[in-house]
Image (cartoon, rainbow, N blue to C red):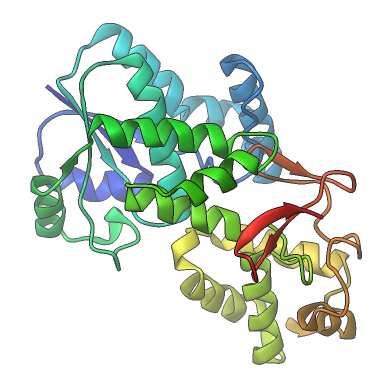
Length: 308
């Protein structure tokens, strides 16, 4: 018996058409976004996640509980003993972090085989594939070795650590799993740059605004989603970043047109630091909470994280 864990509704809708047998759980959490502290109990962890998702995305608590994939997974495994659990997740950061968590957790819960569907490097989401392509990806799925499962456990521990020291050490030590290495490298790039305080995502969005001059929000969002497809951003996440930019006076909006300010240009050029201009203080990157007294930055020269 197989259990298929599907990454999101788009994948679930596409999977339904394949006729592939087995039980299904749809996973909606986005563990790449918001707090994932590793120093709390599991019960407290999911309370923190629920509070963040409901507040950040205006999701009602009842809807969050209804879509709680972890509770469904726990309940399922208490009643069933699948021979294999198939993870249907793509190559963007959202899917990768979710997959790392699930591999890490499943390794502790069961002894069944865990597999990950095979996607081409240019395919971000399984939900974009045709029925035949999904069937082919399923046939070519990779059964994860114990070594990969161990790496996923170490990766999740590093991702949820209160400092990025473990993350940096894990990346420097070398990782056999390319999808875990790719995920952690993308996550590391989200930390504020030591040069100007912008993470890779914020830098890319502000550059888009700078080069597009007076573009309207829908066009900026479309271009950012294409440019940053490897990060799996949604329209709403880009809108939240644009709101943060407005509050920090990096951009202005007039008659629907968004324009970068002089402060925004100074930050892009590295003459002013975004963190010091009160832009991205007090936010979470995995288990790390960036604050005025706990500032970590990515040094592009040494390609490593350091305390600022």
